[in-house]
Length: 404
Image (cartoon, rainbow, N blue to C red; front, side, top):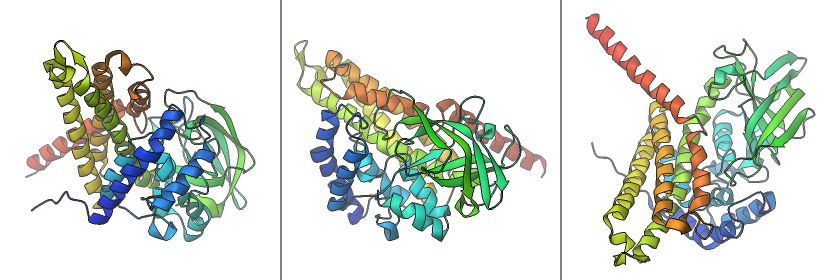
């Protein structure tokens, strides 16, 4: 059986257009504002960039065609998202940044027809942004989703939600929230969660604080949000009651991979800057790039980039085939998150003093890349899941042999 890793001509065209758009238009904006999207104007700049991306025919490549997107599958998104991610403002410009990209994906697969018109249509068009309210302050849900403590109680015509959320990306300025709340059981129990849709101006929703983090490219920041007697009508339940964790799987695997795609572009940029520098910088009787220790760092970066892309391609293939690809996405996410950090660190080292300065983008790109080892599941949690699956397979194999 042969495997064709070539992309169709229409996908290649989108990649080429995205590459030119990002490098000619978006990168200068990012550099001008030192990568801080919220200080650069936030939604005002987003809308300006979105309009130009629409004019180029590269806006919302992931969104369904009927909602104005290009309808690309996971495999075809990979090179487009990576090209956009070469600038930290690129995903915002194409409307493929977190959490909106993942929310578009989830709504397209789960929402009712009425919900698609009310929530997905304006989100896919870039008329509004969204936020996914899952993680909570201790002892609530974080890496362990079963610790979910935000509660939804049934009332006439709907539900009332109470709880606190933390590190909710894009909360400031979001048009609506997707809220994960417990509808059965107690914190620590498996299952019993439901997803609710709520406009941001619903009484009882409060964005309380921006949490200062090392990254600056997430529009709307990372916020603490409280929900106090928030009423959500029955028609705004996303999916079925008590099935929130199952539906979340529709979002989680693909969202991990789109993070790998976007930050691949930033890691590639770190590497490109460093290779350009060492190919020109004179030292020790020649170019730095002619020195063996520098060449080892260049080669290790090339290996990490190639391996990250290979694991990404494999995981996307499984997702497109209809698999949850839990193991493949965990492996790709864990390896890439750590590889990108290594790439940024080597690139900084190769550039010496300039590497840690604002004269080159590597230092601030490193600040964007480092959180990926925590976002969408810390490396330790993914390793635990990968190991548990491997040991489980071994036990089943042993039982099958014993039962013959």
